[in-house]
Length: 221
Ligand code: AMP
Image (cartoon, rainbow, N blue to C red; front, side):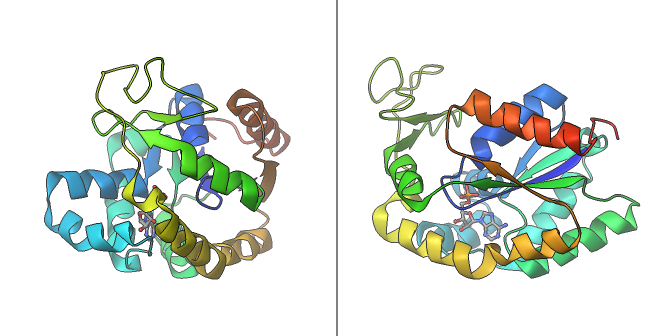
């Protein structure tokens, strides 16, 4: 099963991608996570992408497309994958389509997580993450057991640089200008399925699974 999760910053793409990946036994491919790791590792890619990400802007298409192409060729992605945060522009979506067609593959569905703007802002401003293992918390909705520290590894939690207000505004604008048009792109291909992204993560996951069942998308298909 080859899936894309689409939605603005704070829609819960990462949370749902992790849950669905565990449920279906296929990898979550998050370009944001891959880029953050590159920044942390100080690689050439990280040096290029870091300042762009901190400002909340989109990294150039060529960079992210080549990351995704490489990642999808890894053996664990052979039976399917969940793309989280990619594609984010029409050219990225076109390149993905071409790359998959070259391997006689196609997307099974694009899930659009629909969340009102006030909820997005609330989620993003309270989001804290573990710099060591990537666990994500929310100060109100999903607090760690000990305030400020990761439940799993004990590291001090941080706020993502791009979750600060100025960057969030830029990210929302980038979403509206460059990513929202993908809904029409995938709508035309009859792949788009909108899911209400407000509520408990389990309930949203169940709604996504129901949509996939209705479309008769099954793992290995
Ligand atoms: P995310 O974790 O998905 O919110 O991504 C964090 C940041 O990484 C974004 O604000 C962009 O700067 C960059 N990024 C991630 N995925 C992409 C993409 N598909 N295209 C361009 N930039 C991306």
